[in-house]
Length: 95
Image (tube, rainbow, N blue to C red; front, side):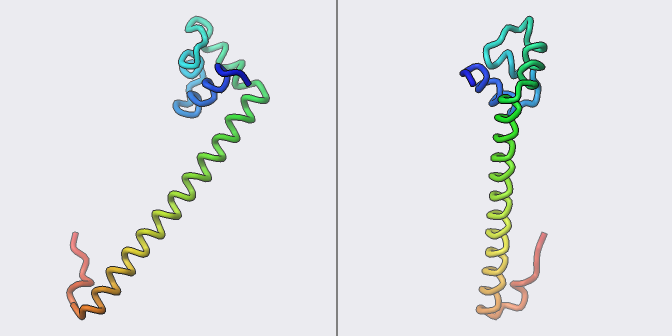
């Protein structure tokens, strides 16, 4: 894959628009729509896009899991401190 194709893949992943990605990657504005279509149909471009999407999804999944753990740990820590300090109203949530 050449540099322009790599740039196309990266831009396409950002905006999902093949024509805009082609222009940003350095292809001609006048042929951007056709070039974007052609690039999306090349097997190695398809594979690169799919590989990056899978990596992005994996990263997002890990981030969600970490966020859930941090949230859960924070809640448990709050409850633990409230029980330890024996503050009956400390467990009342205020919005």
